[in-house]
Every structure is written in C-alpha cells, then in structure tokens.
Length: 166
Image 1 (cartoon, rainbow, N blue to C red):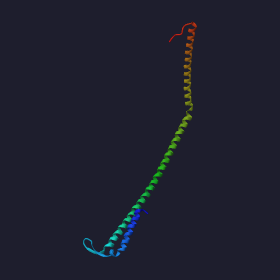
Image 2: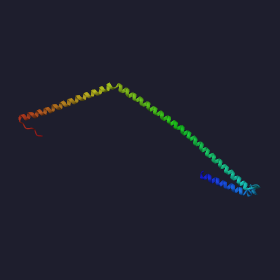
Image 3: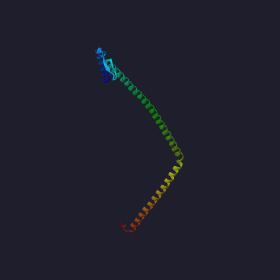
C-alpha cells in the first residue's frame, strides 16, 4: 500500500479507537447554540458524524476523480489508436501513389527509349562521323604542314645553306 493510504487508515483507526474509548463522553448531552435557538444534543456524536460525513464525501470525490481520469485515459487511448490507424492508411496510400507514379514514369521512359533509339543513335552516329571527318582533316593538314617544313629543311641542307636562327 502507499504511504498516504496507510497514514489515512492509521488516522481513521485512531479516531475510531478514541471514539470507542470515550463513547460515554461523546454521548453526553450538552447545550448547543444554533444561532436563533438552543438545543440539548451530544456534541461528540455530532462532531463524529461530521467527520464521518466529510470522510465519506472525500472518498466519493477521490473515486469520482480516479474514475474520470481512467475514462479520459481510455478515451484518449482509443482516439490515439484511431489516429494511428488513419496515419498508417494515409502513409500506405502515399506509398501506393508513389509506386504508381514511379511505374508510370518508368513506362514513359521505356516507351521513349524504345521509340527513340533509331533517331537518337542516328543523331549520335552522324555527329561522331562529322567529328571524325573534322579530326581526319585537321590531322591531314598537320601532316602536310610537317611534311612541308621537313621538305624545306632538306632543301636548305642540300643547298648548303645554313639553318635560319630563331
């Protein structure tokens, strides 16, 4: 048991024992003033009744607070479970939409690749041919230039001329 519960039971037990030991004093009638009138009644029994009433009232109040907290907790747990299920469904639908989108995009790419290889390959091949021709032409010009320089140098050497200084 919790310390508070043990303490409360101890206090109530002490009060009950005190009341039992002094019952004759509790039941002795005394004059009580009610404001407008005066009455003969046992003050101890009235005070004991007030203590019992307040104890019962607070006990009912504690039970009510605990029950309402329990019901609120249960209701929140159910709402949380519903929201979790809703979020899971929404996430699953988003994944489904994403998968469908990706499949459609992949199909579009496959169709484009299936229909375009001839034109794309043709374009690439034509460009490669042009580049190859340009490279061969540039190589031929370089070859001719080098051959001309070598021929000129041979002429100068044969004529016995000196090489030009740079």
